[in-house]
Length: 397
Image 1 (cartoon, rainbow, N blue to C red):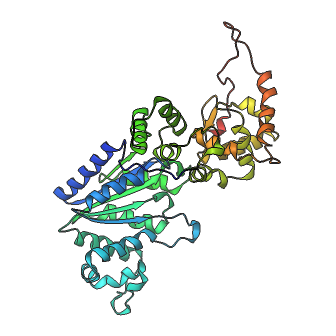
Image 2 (tube, rainbow, N blue to C red; image 1 turned 90 degrees about the vertical axis):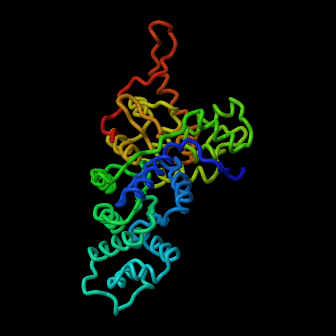
Image 3 (cartoon, rainbow, N blue to C red; image 1 turned 180 degrees about the vertical axis):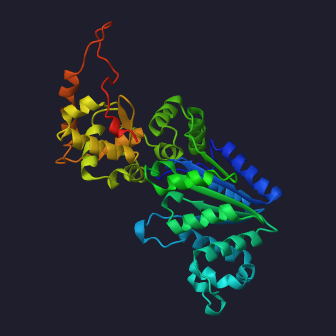
């Protein structure tokens, strides 16, 4: 297996880059604060877009970047802001930062413990005081040079980080501040706190929100050409476009793999990404997905019921969990995997002796069910190719 490639040129995000430049120009020209929230599925290119823009903006603005990390309940509050404050001190100097913070500078020790100074801590040191101080700090230090504040992977943000960001976006009035936030749309399942948070944030006129789309075939072809350094043949473009479905990270991982036919041939980095959400599901949901992966591209409820060895309620519960987790997508008649490569990875992950059976065993369980439900077309007498049964309405998110 070869090492994954990365294109030196960003493809398909030119209009997004122009939009970010316009936002920074507006902040520089009009002052105040603007915020942009960028969503998209894993691998769609959010990090690449921000990296390109931030590198470009460094020549005319103070660029600060913080990242949220998936640490569950063990994550430290304000983790992205600790990195942001350290970078601010590197760029502007400790003295300038403490001077801008004024008499409340000691409160910054909540973000960076090494700044603790008991003599400088005022009586009021709660969250509200911290929010005020950080907002004033950014306003003051962006008076003569725009400040770009970027926070990635907001879907993993702790509550304290979200509240501080909310305060900054709502309350900052002076200076020249551009806030950039990114998140994975496929992580925001029903009940995720970021759903209501983003809806509330979007009601603020200062906030612009958009999602990055998958690449079209022409853009995939251009990306492959940059990766290979030569014009690709049509068969290569068709194969990679079909398997990647236009997700840039998938394109970069797939290109250069000769004879890729099954999920067993996928690069390990790609398999890990594809299986990450699957591995967080319950055992019943995983068993169902292994069974579905052996059933083909299109599977309906009646067919699955014929091969599933549990009760109808257990089937509905497992399917609902998979849909809510954004592994399966359901409509009124059928359901499929969110991405074709997810099915390939799960199908390759089938192990002998599992509840779903081995790969061959799972396939054998589908054959009699399909044979029993294969009516002939009234015109041609050939088997129908569409799914005709209704899927459970409970599966839809």
